[in-house]
Structure formats: structure tokens, C-alpha cells
Length: 441
Image (cartoon, rainbow, N blue to C red):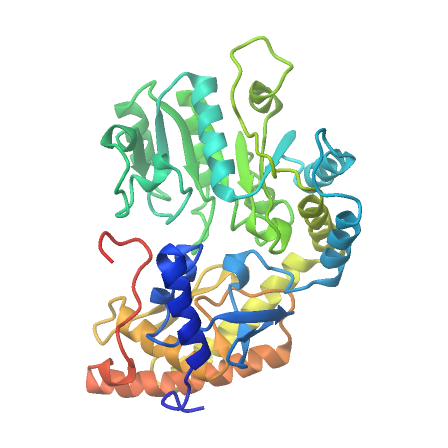
């Protein structure tokens, strides 16, 4: 379909309603319409497998589903059946449900590097609980975050370090320091500079690049030597890198780790896991000061924990992680071939682990470009592909990937025209997309 003919009138009106009632027009900034070409931000009606339909009736092959949370595909039968079964039995009680211990047993059997687990509803609660626990265990105030990774929590200790720091006291932000990924010497220098002040090192163990040889083991040694807690944020790497996360793949055991996203296949569930002696500080079987670890009304809703158990079983029994890698490799090869054939192979760059692919759009000077990203997204949408990333789900078929590659090829033909003109503006259809983290609207 020509992009000039691709209109979303119902979605456009719905976006106006969303902005009138909801700050930002969405409940997650990464889902905002500023992340899509102007007037081409579809509002979703339903999803099934690897496809979604917007309220204008268009069907798309969808990538990065639910911000990487729907890794098995929408309405996965095993997950939906598990959820339905618990809904008929009640979702929340005044005492723990037996489902809570069953879910904990299943999780710890899948992630055997952890000794205890506590469930919550979102990733921010889990990572903030890890930070609080590390501070309590060490008696130290500072948190060291890997500055090369984009997001850890909505809470002040992290958001204060971003361009969207309005409303957060400087005194809070000053307690968070950053270290670069892959650079052990710089991290050691940071730990020495703030000697006996840093409670924890928190990082995503891997993202768009593999960790350098020995890096994670080196961090483990630094944390031990400097007496701080090593925290792996496995919100993305959990299950996509291996069934036991990045820690299971690379063989380096953190003190604490946090999981979410793929854990519930779209249902709200996250987890804080780790060493028993640390986790018990948030429990009732110790003699020290109590730590308010995680305590949420809805943290152990039975249907979300049932979803998590179904996801864990599906991953381990059906080899989902291996399939995600195979699908990603097929997609990456097709996209790279299409881009090269259209002469934009140096400008549309696919990177990351096969199970977690992202793309970069570069301008004539090979610099990252939001206008060229806008052009590319616009062409993909017109071709029936909704792809803020190329993160695959298990529901994708070979035909879906073939369709995607065909849409990419058509988009790359337009990309080439824009590069030749040294100006993407005629193909944008409005304002370019914007980064999520920016100081001004």
C-alpha cells in the first residue's frame, strides 16, 4: 500500500481521546504516539499470535509485542487456559494462595542460580526492592548503575539520572552513580573513589552486544572484593537468553536478579530472586532490622502466577528460547539482505542477540537519525508491519518473516531515494518521531 493512501482515521480520533483523558496518551511512554510517524500511530483492537489488528481494521505482523513481554504470542492457549482456571477459583485472598508456593517452586527450578523469589507486578518494583535490600545489607547509600543501558525503574533513584528528572530532589539523584558497560577498570576506579559507599552494582548483563570475555566474572570479583551486591536486571534477558536468563547462559551468579516481561506473556508479574541470606532480610526469620522488601496488594494474584507457571513450563518443555533465536536469525538475515540489495546496508543496521533484535537508522553521514527512523516506520506500517524493534515472538511463522522482509525491501527502496536526495523530509508525512527520554515535549 502507498503510504499516501495509508490513513488511520479511527486511530487518529482515538488518540485525541487518549490525550484528553490520559497524560501522554498512553500508560507507558514507549507506547506513546510520539514514537510513531505523525497521524500513523495505530490504536489496537485485538491480537492473536504474532498479529494485531487496529481499530481501523488493518492487520499487522507485530514485533516487540507488549514491550517484549508477549514472547509466546498473544492469547497463547497454555497461558490462557491456566489463567481461566484460576479465575474460576478466585484471584486474591486474605492469606497466601497455594499457587504462590507452586509458582515459587517452578520459578526456582527454572532459575536454579537463585535460592528465594518474591513476586510483584512490574519490573520497577522488583529493581527498587533489590536496591533497597542492597542498601540495607551493606549499610551503604550509593547505587552504581550501568550507564550504557536505558532503563531500570520508574523510581527516583534511577529516573533522576535521566533527562526527565523534573520533580526529583537533587539529593536523591546524587546517590546514584554510573559505570560503563564492559570496562572493568573504570568500574574499579568508581568503587575506589566511593570506597565503602556503594551498596550495589546493577546492570543488564547483556543487551545489544555480548559481554566481553571475562567481563561478568570480573564484575563478580569486583563486587566481592569491594563488599557490594551484584544485581542483574534480567527483565529483557530473562528467558530470551536462556530459560535461566543471562546468568544461566554465561555462568555468572549475581547476588540478586530481577525478572519480568516474558515471565507472564503479557500478564502482570515480575520477580526478585537471589541469595537466601539477602532475601531473608525481607522476611521473618532473622534477628536484624526488618526490610520492607515487597508488599503489594496484587503482587500474588493467582491468575498472573498461573500465567507465569504456564510460561515457564512452555519455555522448558518446548525449547522456546532456541526457537526465538532461530526466528531472529532468519529475520536478521532477510532484513540485512534486503537492505544491502537496495543499497542501504550501511544505513539500516540490525543488531543485538537474535532473540532480541533492534535496528538503527543512519543518515547520509552514518549518524543515528530520527527522521530516517520515521521514514522507515511509516513504510513498514503501510506494509502491514508494526515494528518499533525486530524483537521476535514464538508465534511468528516463516510466512510472517517473509512478509516482513518484503515490507523492509519496499521501505529500503524509499530510504535509498531519501539518501540520494540527502533529505528524508518529503517522506515523513509530518514531525519525526522522538526519543522517549527528553527534557522538553
